[in-house]
Image 1 (tube, rainbow, N blue to C red):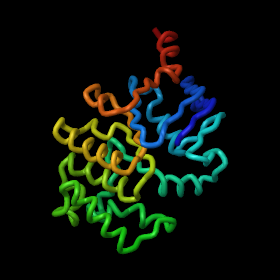
Image 2: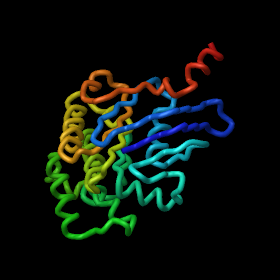
Image 3: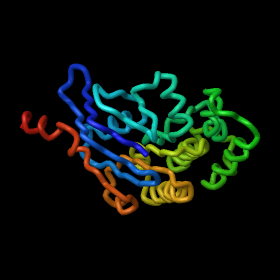
Amino acid sequence: MIQLKEVQFSYPGDSFKLSIPRLDIGRSEKLAITGPSGCGKTTLLNLISGISRPGSGRIILEDIELSELSEQDIKDLRLVKMGLIFQQFELLDYLSVLDNVMLPFRINPILNLDDDIKERAFSVISSMGLGDKLKRYPAKLSQGERQRVSVARALVTKPEVLICDEPTANLDPVNRDRILDIIDSYCDETKTTLIMVTHDQEILQRFHRIINILDYSNYKDKNELNG
């Protein structure tokens, strides 16, 4: 499904470096990425999603090599094949729950907004217990409700890959488990690949495989130099 081969990444003027000789992520696999803060977990997600480009190496989604795509093609690929869920929700305050969920279809013509999509949006929102809050704005929602809206927005496009950057970090255990149950159920039903960054040791049993970003980062070397 996803392959990273001989990938090297660094930020200009910074000693931080990611070096990934080989990483294969299978279709329908649930992969957790762990490790200390500031050592490259989000950077790895950005590389996989095409938000960042490696200095060298290859990143392949199915048979598509990301380095061969233009910026617009990568944006289109993210919209069509990927769902992104963030720790900070990334909702637009001036849009209702329904309009936030349908936003991907309004910002890019590559996604066709029709009656079927509207029905799917209603269905996804309702499945998350938000069917009575379609017209509410984010400021009137709880933390857990806001994150459910962000999950609904990621799922409404039927992504083949779900990329999550600590989506439950700001939630209490009850809301955390509810969000994870929704994500798990969707991935199980649709054979969607799940890649999630997390610090939460209590949820790791949900994943097929766990990798530590320190295996690919020079974070340890930097600490040794600074220690």
